[in-house]
Amino acid sequence: MKEIRVAIIGTGAISNRHMKVWENIPQVQVVAAAEIDQKRLDNWSLRYGVKDVYTDFRKMLERDDIDAVDVCVHNNLHAPICMAVMKAGKHCYCEKPMSASYFDSKLMYDCAKKCNVKFAVQISSLFTEQTRTARRLIEEGQLGEIYHARSVIANYRRRPSMDGPFNGGTPDFMRAAMAGRGQIIDTGIYHLGQMLYLLGLPELKCVFGKSYHKIASSVPGRAVEVEDMCVGLAEFEHGFTLDIQEANACNADVPPMSYITGNKGGLIYWNIDEVGGDWSMGQGPAKLMPEHMRHGMRFTGECQGIHVDCDLKTYYNQMQNRCYNPDMMTWYDNQMHWYKYLIDELTEETRYHTPEIALQASLLADGIFLSQQEGRSVTAEEIKEKSQSLAIWHQETPWGIFDYDSQI
Ligand SMILES: NC(=O)c1ccc[n+]([C@@H]2O[C@H](COP(=O)([O-])OP(=O)(O)OC[C@H]3O[C@@H](n4cnc5c(N)ncnc54)[C@H](O)[C@@H]3O)[C@@H](O)[C@H]2O)c1
Image (tube, rainbow, N blue to C red; front, side, top):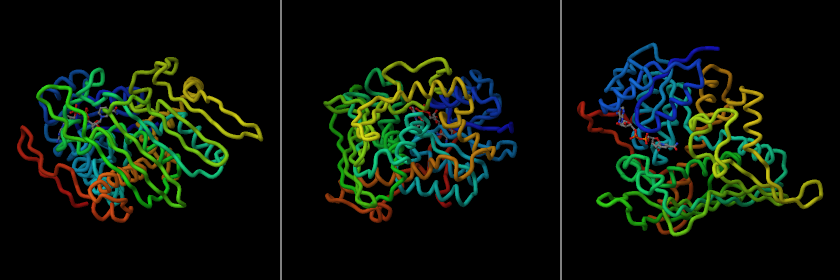
């Protein structure tokens, strides 16, 4: 199968999970990396044996022997760096979230189209048997007419870099200048992205919402600059509604549990993938995720005239499929999916349109903040019109100021 030469930008925490996945795809060679922190770059280069390293990614992009770039920097650098990658004519894979605002996500989306490159955004919750089975049941009409859905997670204390045992992330997650927003675009994208995909990417009509920033920092001397909770009620075309609760710190502890209800049946699903998939967690085909992480789903409703309430072991099906058909990794891993898209095994029709899904999730998230600002429900047109860039277009680095071009 065709070889692809990939470069990485940003060799921080998430790049290590991406590397675990690349190691499972022998046709992908990671040939170069760029990072502004010299010490981190040197350690990373030693760890993975990648010798061609750069402190200025723009020099790396000048090479013509790099096919594609995996962007692993923090949120507010996604738009500037992905756009530079795409304008250099390289295919681009972006870690989630696409960006912190609809405005920036739209720039990225349009840039990919204009540069005619293959662009994907990491949304691992799509790449599970839970999502495949739910989509199949919906397409087969098992739920009937869908009229409401709920996307909910309320964690007591689970802020990255703050609340043990989830404090592994960098403090940038809590900084407005770098993260842009909090939970709604952090693990929220996994819940919203999956929900929007399952519902067939319906057109948003309007949103009413509020964000809260109420729970004190748990690290002395370090501020929390982004929201800890968002709630919202969105209406889509055909009057269908979705209510959203996303909290990474609040005084309730409810595991992620989304549901979709139709007039014939409904699906409740839990343990939505928020970690980047099995490979990124080092899970081989014969190794099950710990119980509390196994994706689950329940169908409730009528099936062939009988009222049922039954659990679907989607995670076991995923493991079975992986054991007996390794090709299924195309549908169980983000990076494998992108690779298959790069080598033309997936087309625009067959691939998951992750940039489109992430763009619609950005619209919804921005709507919550705009609604709060206006004190009323806001329409999709207003959100598009009023959304602003939160990205970093002038970055101070140890190597001088990096100026990014915001024109597509
Ligand atoms: N999927 C998950 O569960 C998960 C977990 C952690 C992080 N993330 C996402 O991954 C992204 C990165 O987070 P992280 O925790 O790896 O952050 P990090 O700070 O550990 O890594 C980012 C790296 O980018 C480098 N960088 C900044 N500007 C650069 C530039 N101009 N050129 C090259 N390198 C540059 C930084 O020096 C840093 O080393 C975030 O968007 C975050 O949301 C996802």
